[in-house]
Image (cartoon, rainbow, N blue to C red; front, top):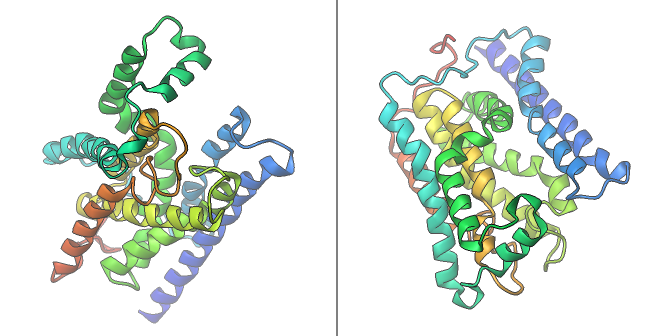
Length: 306
């Protein structure tokens, strides 16, 4: 047993080391090459970095001769179609409610004229001739109908690492609550270089970059609990990747409705401390529910055989 725990610690350490070094190398390559954040090349590099947690999963298994059992890639649709439908549409409802709640708290920031969307339409060649209301409808339908699958490949790149490897390994040493929380913190810190570059929050806000880093950690802990809970219940990274895909597709949607200056650390995007409140509340409920279980949700090293 002690030898198994020692090996698990080595694998956990190696996974984190590979996941961080490979991703941060990709993140920092842009500034080192003089590529400004927000350019198409920099966005492509960030998308490429999303696959580094999966790379860390695979390399750790090869280096430590762990093998590829318990890979958690099978979607496991059998008997869980209703659950998948809830996963497909539930987070979308939560996302739209997040925007509604933010503007109820900050009504002076709401812009019924959709000035931000008008400006976006003016710069987009594919939007020529479409009214703002039509563009808004298209955006809403995109989030609802294809949000959970439109980014599924890159989000699987992350989820195979965070939920598919890191979380199960942490559960060997911590409670379900502890493992979910620490997974979220590590996930948030993994984003540190791009947050400093301006990802999600920009660079022109009070407390830059520390409050942005803190907000990202809070967001990753909250979303990580939601995704981790579905992973533990369904023994697959696919549901977590679907939720992650939806979040990436619609996280900035409330910005279409904002006017004037706003503090991105607070919102209106769901990555903000106020914009993300509904996700935090949902995460708190799952966190409480997990703690009420007399036994950890079953996902032992010896149970899963892919």
